Amino acid sequence: MNPGIDLQGTFIQTLRDLGLPAGAAKAIWMPLPMFLIIIGATVGVLVVVWLERKISAAVQQRIGPEFAGPLGVLQPVADGLKLVFKEDIVPAKSDPWLFTLGPILVVIPVFLSYLVVPFGQNLVITNLSVGIFLWIALSSIAPIGLLMSGYASNNKYSLLGGLRAAAQSISYEVPMALSVLAVVLMSNSLSTIDIVQQQSHYGILSWNVWRQPLGFLIFWIAALAECERLPFDLPEAEEELVAGYQTEYAGMKFGLFYIGSYVNLVLSSLLVAVLYLGGWETPVPIEFVGGLLGLNETSPWLQVIDAALGITMTVLKAYFLVFLAILLRWTLPRVRIDQLLNLGWKFLLPVSLVNLLLTAALKLAFPFAFGG
Amino acid sequence: MNLAEGVQIVSFCILSLMMIGAALGVVLFENIVYSAFLLGGVFISIAGLYILLNADFVATAQVLIYVGAVNVLILFAIMLVNKREDFKPLPNRLLRQVTTGLVCFGIFALLSTMVLATPWAFSTAPAAAESSIVIIGEHLFSDFLLPFELASVLLLMAMVGAIVLARREYIPDEILPGLTRPSGLTLPERPRELLTLTSGGKGDLRNQKPASSTKQPIDTNA
Image (tube, rainbow over all chains, first blue to last red; front, top):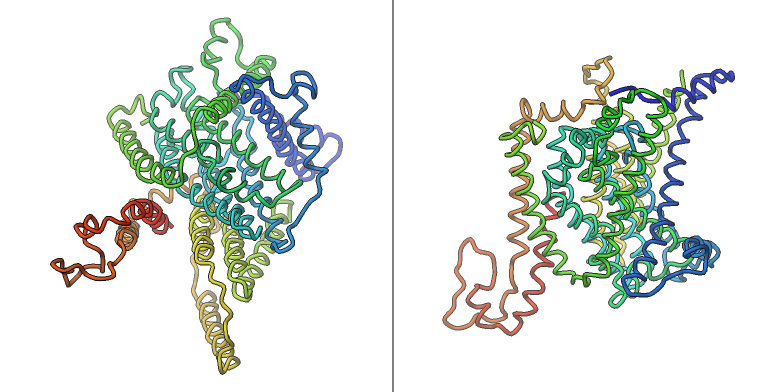
């Protein structure tokens, strides 16, 4: 693997040439990728909201938003601006502190999880050795925020919604973590970079989805349940619970829930892409194409193209999964709470355990194909 | 002192203050829900301290298990029970509080002397951050195999116990003639044949079973 273009190194070197001390130069560099990712995630939310509206409209043979900007692309911006300018209402008998803290606790872990999402060989904020495990741990914080906002609203629908959200989230974390564990078993590492690299040798053929079809399905179902997407949107089932834990929220506090849920959807799709669909890898390995054309792998322009292609591939795969999620939303009816818990504990959990054992057995039997 | 060390000291101070403040809040708040939420703050601060010690895996596991499972279950229990109760002031309140304070201070003093008196085996080599998972895994499957297995057996026992408790059906109001409950080591449970006989509330029972039997395994996962 060639070293690639070292953006960080060149940036810090430039600042040092301008006369800054090394520590200060590094401190200036550090927030840049984080801001970039936060902005990227927020823009991603706008795109998803637009897609959701347009695809939903197409599914129902409507046109959808069309007046705000070409094809209605500015509609999510208008929605967001509306939320920003709405009055921030705190109900009289609620608990103002917890009421404010709840949405914040839901949103922060989701954004923090972007720390480990790789968009290319070196295009990741930190290549942590705990990588994917950090995401599992962070996603387990969100139920506390949901319980908090459900409790603080002082409304029975909110409390019920919060409790349902927490129960759902805990139940589906287990099969999800077990299916991630099967992937980790094959790549011998928790780091997201290593997980993608282990799928990189034969293009589309080496993606984990072929070796882990069961794990892929379990992970996708559990991810939908964690994001509270239909058919698992019980915590905010509007026919039963008004809007669940969001009932009393207005203005930007509601906006935080809204952003959080869509960022979480994009994050889950990105992670499915990373874990099962080869991350930033193209269906035909780019080294192979470069070799055919007789190009030097280390030439700078090829590296820039490579990086751009990597980001495009990751985002494309993620948005394909978002598209699937939106289609599923209009295809499947909502499950009941007992069906949800039954599916999680009595079906997905045993199946994911079997999947884990099978993976371990296959890894011992065929170490060349299952990453021995 | 360079930038990294400064950041380390500042974050250590912030984390310690957060932890002590949150822990005091857990003890001193009248509202039990606040205490439960602040307990989450304590756990998060401890995870931060682990990160400062280069133990990234332990920190992540701390967040996953203590915040994501234990604390959520505590909150769950509080919110499902939701018992508003005005506590009557106990007699000799001052004496009780002073005694509690003394006992707590005694434990604190004992632990502090233990920490200060023990000749800790400090190693000046930096902790291996990159391969901590590998090292932990090797230890778990070599010299710490027995405690590891014992812990898992303990968890299994807790899980079986929880399932047995959760599967208990309603005890009938009166025992039907001809059917006697077996005595001895059995739970006061309605026998299966009784259930089918008095199938009046069968539908309700079916619906309640998943809810009650699924909540318990989470308990033991914690």
